[in-house]
Image 1 (cartoon, rainbow, N blue to C red):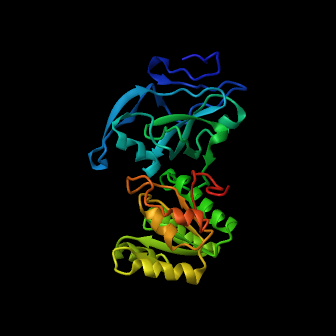
Image 2: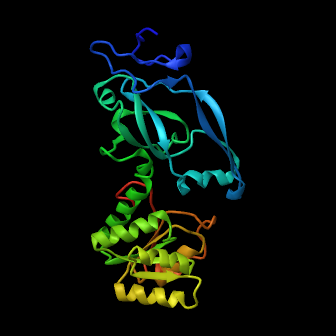
Image 3: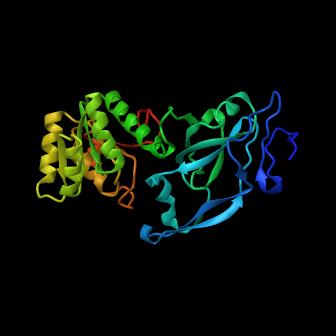
Length: 305
């Protein structure tokens, strides 16, 4: 195949070819097929009924300033599967992942990444497939020796953890409540808060989840399957002078948290694991106790504003 004249890679002839020439971009790090496999998700109200299938599609070609990445691993987050409950088919899924740059569309930043491991973060979705293109300047080069498999979840949970802790500091609360605390994010927060010197009360449903957190070093764990958990939580809120909670469950859970917090507190809702919208909030908490219910996204400062 001859050198493309428009600065893009050429997928004709059964593969993508970006050959090097004096003063041009480097050769591909590996042979790239003209087509690739991509996951199609068939949504369902019951996540247990969600199915996935593979379809063959054209391998994308990087433009000037972009690179082609061979994906190695990608996680599954609530932000990925939340929309699937509505039914229908979903393509171009996966908001984060990691892989290896295999070709450049041209440009110094893109050329410099060929052959290197990178992390990707794309809210529009693109990691549940074999290859994807991304602007070179939007990528996160991996440290030498770090395998892409170990960096696939480098963005959503770590950045959320940082955003939560920074928000606690912004609100000047010595500690905070976190629900669904046995999640990967929750386990990360146990270790991160300990390192940062921020108090944390973990709320979980089952004792085995509590034991997992204790083994990670968690000091305060409330188990909602146990009788008297609300009184235990109220006591911790008072003792630790907590004025902030982060709720991943929604439904009536956020209202319960708001009820145990003192006047002027804030409950941040950042998930909907209950499958329900907010309800049962005591209006008196909002009006007379000046408590607040707020939301947030996935980039720090996550909840400040």
